[in-house]
Image (cartoon, rainbow, N blue to C red; front, side, top):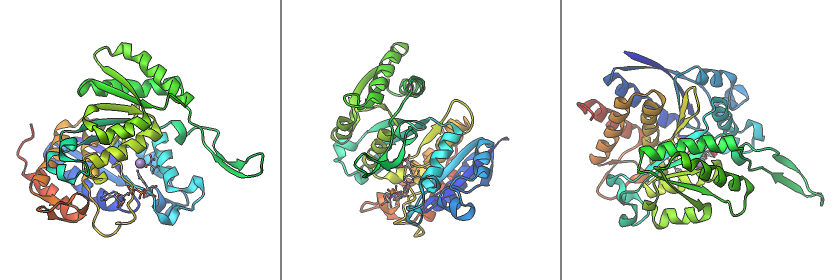
Length: 365
Ligand code: NAD
Ligand code: IPM
Ligand code: MN
């Protein structure tokens, strides 16, 4: 059997709940497709800070780098919100992304027919939406320098950050996005704020220049404020969206709600080489942590992305995706996607239903 080493990073809040479920699904789908997965679990985020004093211990980064793929739950929580910047759980996650060099974050937002009623948008607006947000993940204002705290000339406290992109950082994410669009419907919308920000002006110039290498792709540009509006006005106009780190963060949360819930959206983060990082787009959901209420489907679907983009195991990936669809067909729903007439289940039971379905699928096309 083909065999791979997977690093599991459950993290904080609902992270451990959803990763436990996704791990079982990953194991079983792999086994049924002749893929052996070996797991090692490591600490990240607030739980790592509590145990070791830092949010990303060297041991965790080394293990992640040495494995074939990494599956992360979520990090963060009230307990650590007042940690110093370099000791925040969020800083650990950013260090992990930077350490793995995973600059391209793919966040698919597709409305499943079974969940149209869970969307807050009208059925005719939400139905059939299928968007891929390609978010730049290791640059921009999240990492730009100078940054910090200081005082201005009036002696007042200030906090400051820098939005900065180099030509090569823009080119490499744009190339990924053009390639992604090519495998989808051939439409790419680059979202920026080029009417105001220099970093966006360069972004638009480089993306426009690259378009000549992809004559088959229909490229358009949109300002981020308009894009936020268009996403809820007429989301079907979008196929692939490429954007910077912070705009991608915000627009992907917005896009998730079109599909019914942030608890549904997976992501894949990949770099030029080395293991990819796979995580749901949601956070640690401290408001529902420890209550068996979390929707594990975003993490289960992230596990499918791990198989596809991280390991090239397409059959096992399809098996998981088909099982999720089938489980929804059976009517099982966690609270975030519940609608009258469906069956309300917790995180664990949703996992068990997906597992049963993974097993029962005879063969996946
Ligand atoms: P969040 O995504 O954790 O939660 C937002 C809302 O969505 C909450 O009401 C939550 O209950 C709900 N929700 C999220 N995931 C869900 C799921 N799987 N099933 C059902 N409901 C779900 O965002 P937040 O509240 O702004 O942040 C909480 C903490 O998570 C913060 O510390 C933040 O920094 C961190 N965070 C981490 C990540 C990550 O690890 N990648 C992402 C976003 C936020
Ligand atoms: C996400 C999160 C993170 C981000 C935070 C927790 C650092 O919101 O994964 O979307 O902003 O990238
Ligand atoms: Mn986010």
